[in-house]
Image 1: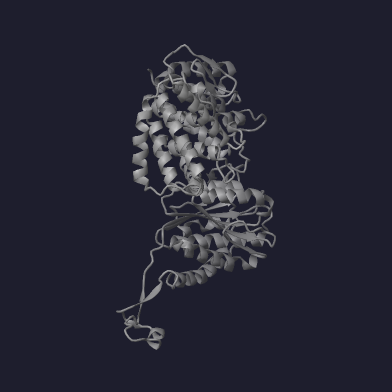
Image 2: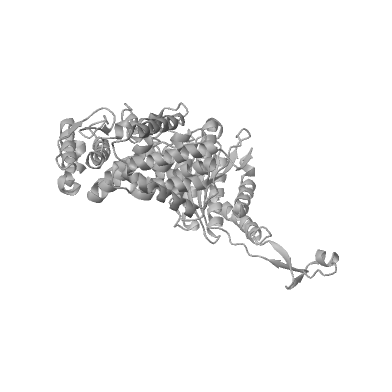
Length: 557
């Protein structure tokens, strides 16, 4: 089979924006026919992206743009992999199990396809990442039905583990945490082991067999309720793999009793969707729904789940001459307090021991016969590594004094964090100067002192996209290797998005992202675990420092 690079001239992709609709169709048809090794298949530019092995439906993305080719190639690449590597014989007989089988089969066939034509990986990854940034990929929360949670958690975990798209780790971690919270880590490890065997298997029949076994174990676990097995993770994996081996020889010719058992299993699994429409988490249908949104620029990302890029735009050159002076004055005070805090009992807890240099007066006063622990000894507690993303609200509602104080606080906060071993800080203002972006103030690899002018150049501008800014900061943090990942936000705009923020807070917590918030305004609702509200910018510096102390204390939890 010819590779994608051989089949498609590079300039044909780069200049597609100049092509008319017919030329785009012809280019896509040629590419996909080449990938399918010129099998007798029909390409249809319409419907929902899918295939039955003979006809490939590509949906109807907007034409006359690079988005058209990206969408067609992303959908087409995946569906051609189905044509080449999926056996459709038994797929139509799955009933309610079809969605679980499809989630596993999608990962399996893409993994095989990417090994044969590596160039197709880029098309799929690029388009899915764009949909993530627009908030179009499905996520889980506490209201997600059991069956949907199972399918999505295994899909994102296997995609992250097997395909390794750059953006899937946060989605995998979030769904994994929600599954473990509800059903326990042992079950997750067991089902993940079975799912991995499925996505690395050699045939669709094996995937179906593993999917049935996963469904059976999941249904059984739910029927057990709170009496979950306490088997260790390693033994569970081994047991699951051993029990699944015989299922690999599943034949399409099932006996009557087997067929009846399968129908019963499919019915029980369908009930676990709890009336929820399974199509709501079908990735292809979500992508198609996005592509049919008429009248919207492909660059706009307004949904509460959207992720925006951080852009290094130019800031105002009009610098307040007293800004640096006030910043350094606040930093001197804060640094002294912070140094004292790091050396306090919180970070160096004390206990009594038999040997030491410092006698404990209370221990001596209450000394009893046989007691020899009279010396005070300090234990050094290592601060876990942490990555901070400092978010500064610069919306139009931030008046000049509040904006200036917030900028000073953000700059000092970054300086203090960067001085702690194992901790690094980045900083962003929102919204950005370009539409649907964050304004990058400081990168992790920059010295805080070298970007003082960027903090000084922040001015009030635009509206208050809190949800999108949190998502974007979380996406940046998810790629960091530090143990803790913390968003430290200064904003006066919580009220307008209270319900959305409550939902977003839970999603971020499940993904291992901590949110610390300094709310400006007496009406700011308490949404985050670590949040402090102030009425006036005059109280901002003290409140910010208290939040920083509380954040660092939390390391022992």
